[in-house]
Length: 262
Image (cartoon, rainbow, N blue to C red):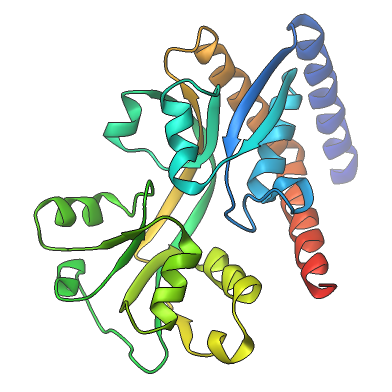
C-alpha cells in the first residue's frame, strides 16, 4: 500500500512537471562556475554534485543551463556585473544581495578549520584566534561572525587566490589555520598533495559554520525573478520525488570512483 501511494505521488509530480514544461517557454542561461570539488568542477561527473542538481532542477522547469568556469576570484564577480546570467554555490551576504537575487538553498557546506597535525589550535570563541595566521581565499565568505571580527580588526586573515594555495601554505607551516568545507578540503588534499604531505594536515572535528549555498542571478537580469521562481519549483520537485538524494549519491560515487582510477 505504501509503495502504491508513493507511485501515485511520483506519477502526479511527473505529470505536473510535464505540464509546467509544456506551458513555459524554454530559457537558456549561462552560469559561472569554479573548481570546488566535489561540489563543482569541470573535470568531474556532472560538473560536480551541486552543478548536477542545479542543472536538473532548472531542466525540470524548462531552463537550459551552460556553465563557464572561471578562477575563484572571478566567478562571483562575473555574475555581479552581468557578464553571465548568474552563478552557483554562494552564501548570502548583504553586500552580495545588492547585485544578486538568491534562490532557495541547494545544499549546505560544513565549514571547518584545517590545521597542521603537529600544531593543533584550541579555541572556544572565534575571537580567541586573533593572534593566529589564518588563510582565506579571495572572493569567499566565512560566516557573519568571521567577517565582523575581520572588519573590527580582531582577525587579520591572509588572502590567496585559491584554496589549493592556502592548503600549500598551511602544509608548509606559513599558516596556522585555513577554513574550508570538510569534504572539499579532504578532496583537494588527495588531488594535490603526496601521502606524506597529506598526513601533515588535518581538519578540526567540529564545524564553525554550516553554510547554505544558493544559486544567484544577476539582479538586473530581465528574467531574474522568473529564473529564481523556476529554480525553486524544480528544486522542490527533486526533493519531493526523492531524486535529489539519488542524484547526489550517484554523482558522488562517480566522482570518487574516477579518483580511484587515476
